[in-house]
Length: 219
Image (tube, rainbow, N blue to C red; front, top):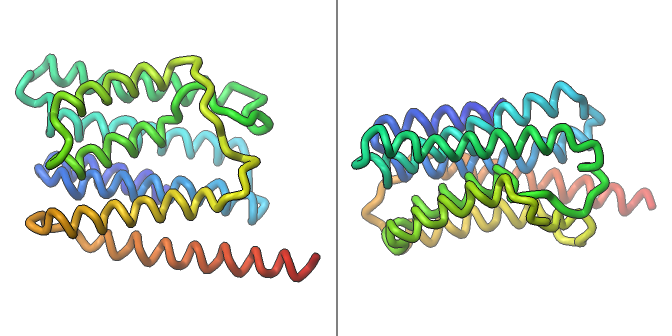
């Protein structure tokens, strides 16, 4: 639900013309989305209800929000045509999520079929943050490619069996990106949600470390 709230905040920020913070809200939602499955497993709270709620939140935060962001930053000059083009992103994302939800072997597979909508939405957000170095034509091309890849049959490794702290890696990449942007593009003012992201990251990693330490001591 926190993921969904940040998706809404991203949409609202795009309406206000605050595209940089709109992109950051998507990345914060991505961070929260990476935590919820881990927390549900640790708490023994996994359920079909949670799975459906997660998908509904994902289509807003990583489908609709990036599409509105792309329209405001790249396709707005095209008017209604630009809206239709931007609207393709949540459409393909919804197809990707629906296919994922009915795949009963998802939990045991070592790969995803098609690019996950979370990753696609996060890439759009990062492209917006780094728009001062990424040409608009390149952004449009990547946007189109991501739409196709979400519904493709391309096998994307899930990295489930790779012994790396995947969630920590995702969040660390997020924070490093924000640090780089604020260092080389200091003219942009960001909201205090960056502080929230850093604090949430620290709390998450502390909990992760304590639980891992407890599990090792029990062995």
